[in-house]
Length: 95
Image (tube, rainbow, N blue to C red):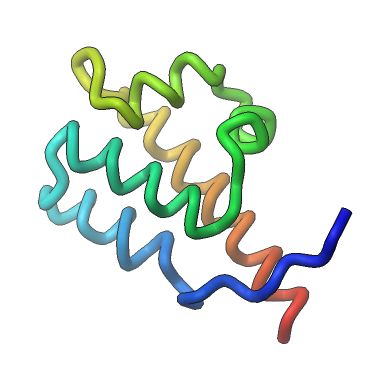
């Protein structure tokens, strides 16, 4: 597996996803779109996020597309923690 370059922004998960979500600034559609943007910025495939979070790819895809009533709060917590952990692992490699 090739080494990944450091992520462009050191705390993209908090600044783009967690904080705006907690402030109520992300609608269901905006949350899904932002989740996808953050995931791609971190160079994390949906398959990898699925494996790490133990959420199905169907669930993640529906969230990213804004389909349905929106994710349950526990699902959001799992996604946040998983992306945060991945981000921190990447940062640790380059510190």
